[in-house]
Length: 465
View 1 (cartoon, rainbow, N blue to C red):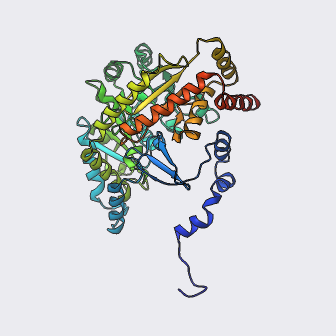
View 2: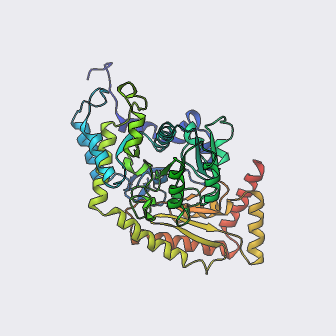
View 3: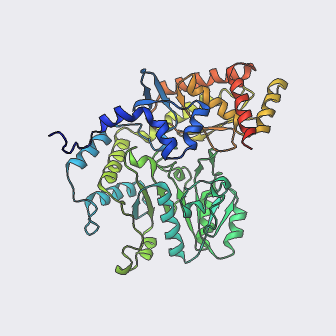
């Protein structure tokens, strides 16, 4: 290449030259509150590489990932089979996204997904979980001719305007009204569901079989009973499996834990991507799709510019192949049971530890008011400043002292959620339980750096009221 000529693009060189500016760039050009928050709680790490369930920093220290990118990294990071599939699809130079042909990969991925969902018939591919929910909302309203969608308090479902309308947390909704017609009911409240259905304008109930916020599971029998009530009133059941699907809870879908539940529409995303290419999918019954796409005039009535792109479809096919070959669902069930049992065994040992719940590798650890006077007084100070500070006090030393990444399960919750890659095994369970035990020992000792950090959090919470 001659001097002064085009230089092309060198990603490695760009990262070498500018990678150290990561937090400054984010502060200046993106969400300025994210780096501020990370600096405040000491999460402002610099991870150099990742593989499987681990990150490494520049000094070669490993970090155990118990967060999996909010569930995106179901197979861990950089699974070789998914990597190869993406290299292969790029090297194939396919005539992708012509918009006026039918490529084989979307049909093949739909076929594989539907094999795990035998009561469903068709798939729409978008680009994210919130798009999958948006699709389900649109299809349910059009297919039933009714405007209102029911959802459960504390649900998530997404942050675009339609899915935000069925988001059960006011902190996400505030300031974005007006939204779609909607009504919230408590998870498990069949009387409230029936009361709303009797009004005659309900298109569907959208529900997470296990809610991401707080890790609360639908009560036994609720999904089956809700399905029967909905169908009796010509309304649909939408299962949001964006986080719980693809093996997370020890079955391919979380709704499969309850016999006889066959949702009319199912939303998946996150882990289907293999951690590389964003993808969302809405699976549904044939009659719903036929009603939405009722004529050639309506062929593009619902579409996505990047939906069904070859890279996403190849990633999805590779993910499902790995799940079958490596028996990922069975591993999630087996390892999740082991982790949950070992954590639950600690409840009698620590008065601040109140409950361990969940299914598979979706586990909630809930803390609560202690009985001893000294700990109770400190707990009360934290709660008065801001609920959820104790859980944050646990998350921080897990990362800082034990190099384990976790998350608080939602704003104002004293719950830690564990959603690690589905490929972890007994060594990772041992590492987490050992670290968690050490943090709990420190918390119950009544002193040390953990409570010093708690005082810092209290000051910040009070200052930002």
